[in-house]
Structures are given as C-alpha cells and as structure tokens.
Image 1 (spheres, rainbow, N blue to C red):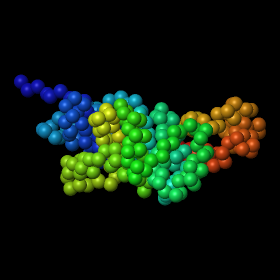
Image 2: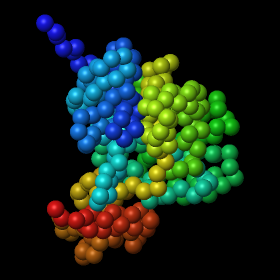
Image 3: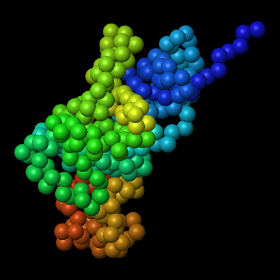
Length: 302
C-alpha cells in the first residue's frame, strides 16, 4: 500500500507571479512551486505547506497564518510586497527627487500592518543632502528613525544597518533609482548570484526585473526582502478610520474637535483645521490627508 508523502513547511523566498521559490524550514532545500488555480494571494515571506514532486518541484497546498502583510492597492488590483516582516527600510536619496507623498503612504500602510518603518537616506555623500534633510523635517513628529547611508562608506553602512537587521525580517522598499540595489549588494554580496539561480530555476531567466526575493543573512540570523522600485502607493484597502493611524501629528489636535465624526475638512470648531491655521500641523501633511480621503471616498461601490 502506497503512503502519501507528508506536507512540509516552507517559506516563500521568491515571487514570479504564479511561480515561486520556497525554502524548507528544516532542511533549507529549495523548491520551484506553484499554486492550484488562478488566484494565489501568496507573498514573499509567507509560510506555506508544500506537496513535493521530485527533487525540485512542489505544489503550494496551504498558506499558514500571517503575522502581517504589507501591500498597496488601487480600485483595480493589489500588489503584495511581503508578509511576516518585522520592519520596513524605505530607501530615499537626495537625487533624483523623492516623493513625500509616497513616504506618507508607506508609513500609513506600515502603521496599519504594525510594522516598524525606518527611512534610509541614501547617497548621503551628495551635496544635495542638506536639502533632503530639510524636506524630511515635516516627518519629525512621526518619529520615524532616519538613517543616512552611502555605499562609498561601506563599513559605516554595515555598522549602522547590520545590528537592526539581526534576528529580523526586513523589507527593503523604495522608488526607482534611489540606490536600493546598491545597498542590497553591500549587505548581501552574492545577491546577484542568487537572483540568477532563481531565474534559472524558472527557465530562460524570465521575470528578472519584476520579482521580489528574500535573502538570508545567516551570520546575524536575519533576512532581507528586496522588492522592485515603484512610483505609486494606493491605499484603497484601508477604511477612512484607518488613515489617522498614519497621522500621529494630528492626534493632539483631534482632542479639540467639536464633533466626534469630524472629517477635518470643513466642520466648525475642528481642532485639526485650527492647528493647521496656527502652524501646528504641516500643510503638506494635511494635503496628503485630503488626497487620501478623496481617494477612499471615490472608490466604486460593489
């Protein structure tokens, strides 16, 4: 009588659409795997149960419960960044210009997923660094740690980041051209080789520019997830009441609102509007709040 092979627990370490690379938690063996059906809902960092077929092939039979999931969404679709992460490193640089709007959106998403966010102000060797520091001033009330980095000071970069990466899973995220890949190559010197191995496992090196990967940092018992650069960060999956989790700079002013259901846009005796007028709330931050409110209210009803 034939007995079925028991399912094994693995973690997703690379995402290529409907194809994945998973690594067995115990043996560290890697498998090229896929889900049944069209919809996956699987993200890098997820823990799953696999059915093994041969030496390198497997089917994802079940996704295990998540601690959290960071993703962006608009009215048409969602983009999953990573699951089961401890912290987010959001990479910026003085040049090209970074988007304060994207920073604010990423912060709101991380707060709602209960993920600690850091800002890596990269290319700190550039003369435009002073201007970049000034632009980030409105974020002081959010108490987001800002760490300046430069790949031309590798030892200093490692000294700052490796202690934070130890025993944690970290998502590396940011706009294109901010030097995110250069930071990854310092922290994971063989990242390019691992990328090539993953692509080869799927055949013909396809999807090499749009995938997400998890890299192990065995010396410090940590891992880092690299995700492709992006230019938008929709928050259509949030509810209006979730937005204020990402605006701690409004919280003191909220106590002075006359109405419990104040939207902080036009109501009389609104503490937020009063604080903005008096300079206690940054106008740029308030404009982000208005944009997000309008986006959520314009979502289609199904």
